[in-house]
Length: 456
Image (cartoon, rainbow, N blue to C red; front, side):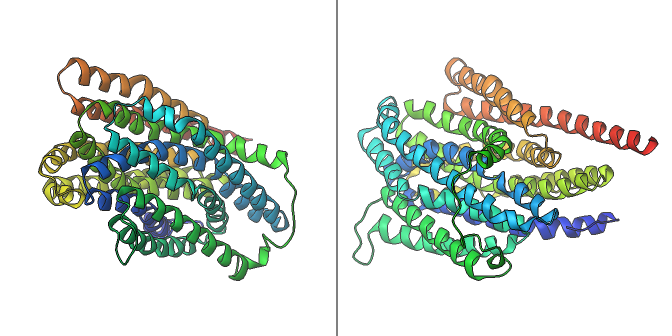
């Protein structure tokens, strides 16, 4: 990052940050996308089973990985303060924390997976596929969380293109393994949707190993010698990471878990409805990678400007990011409206699931506009280090407002499964409004603080 003086310079610098992040996020999500799409072609039961499994796993992973994201600002500040010798210690503590989180997830899953699935009204075959899919994913939890830490270290050095390349390498690995294990090609067993879980777990091991090689052998990472010496566990370092990371993790968890909750509530409907819901939600989540990436880029840009006490530039970056996100949302919404049949055809060949997916995709259009405002604002607020407000807003807008609205519409207004989607859209809209108000307040606070300092 460097100081910019015109809107043109800001746009150019913002895109330099944004594009590698966007490609990385799309590639990471691509694994889940192809799991769902390819499982759908194995059959409706496979699609529904993977849908249930993904809905249980996604909020857990995104929430807990949000905690690990705290390593990026910690390392970046150390480098900015020219205390590079402390970086290996912080990274290794992040790895230890990732291992602790991974083991906790595995043990929690062993205790809770069966009771949770038993409490859902699922067809026997769908339940079996969801169970076995999650068991397969378990084999990749440790490398996934460790990779998250290593990625944070690389991104903190500004090397977002490296993480982009690593993630892009993972995508063909995942697709190829899906092809072999879902459909049983070249002598491999035909595992259906469960094969997608094993393929993803193996892919996680691959990207963790590639990241390890890059950090130990490629400059500028190798000069830090992250794995060059032994460090014991330091709970004080864990506390530092948790203080920043827990609010981030909670805000992400509250947002992603609402979608999982809706999917679980919809388990009372037939398999075709569950499959169509998950297909449409999966594609909407794919499009969400655009505003999410803009949010991540805004955290870097706004944080840089606030650190340099340039509140005006931080405001300009904030609204530049929101504007880009809204324009992209309009483009995606129009594309979804025009190509909804083609999108539905990606997920299934079953006629009933196909027709229902098209209907759900119409509701997904409204997701885009709310996400285009809410996600970038969250990123900008993190740049201001305002992390507590975002998880409170997520809790209220999604769980206190959005979910009850959806439940009421589904149960008492004869809208059925579509009522839940209206509730989700309402929650996203409430969240966008609340967060915009918070951002404007924080910006006014920083402006007045700068003015006061100038007077003194």
